[in-house]
Image (cartoon, rainbow, N blue to C red; front, side, top):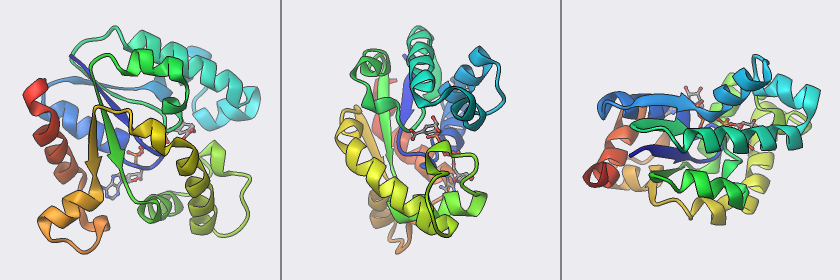
Length: 188
Ligand SMILES: Nc1ncnc2c1ncn2[C@@H]1O[C@H](COP(=O)(O)OP(=O)(O)O)[C@@H](O)[C@H]1O
Ligand SMILES: O=C(O)C1=C[C@@H](OP(=O)(O)O)[C@@H](O)[C@H](O)C1
């Protein structure tokens, strides 16, 4: 069995995925890292700059195909991986978990670390939060139906409601990993 984490950029696929993998004694892998190693670049941002998005998407599909054969892995996929139908052939093997985080929280997180590392955000105008929020809203509109294909959905709004929290920003990665285990633990 393996577990694929899907969700928008900044949703915590890597941060929560690492904690989840330790908790269930699985290995962890990030599909972006596999693409970077394959192409020989240090960041996806660099890859976008040199080769463009289409090249990246082809490499991403190849990485997902490779990762579909591994066992006892938590795999963090890139935020846009859900869009290509072919990718679901690979992501659909094992359990896929959509990490559903409100756009305002995603924009806050990305603004805090800067938009430079997120190549799809660099052409926007305005301050970091506005840039991130505007672009993420447009991407989410194109992608939300694809995220709904995932076999499980871990929603920060639902966790907040369950714990009586007013604000999703107080929900820690460990709390999110626990919610994921509650949802998928019985099928691991
Ligand atoms: N639950 C959380 N609360 C606050 N910040 C978080 C949380 N999860 C992730 N982050 C932060 O958000 C940013 C993006 O997280 P990351 O795991 O890289 O997302 P992704 O892999 O989905 O792009 C990082 O700076 C990370 O520290
Ligand atoms: O949303 C997207 O299309 C992308 C998300 C990024 O991954 P993260 O979701 O890990 O940031 C990375 O794959 C690339 O910049 C494209």
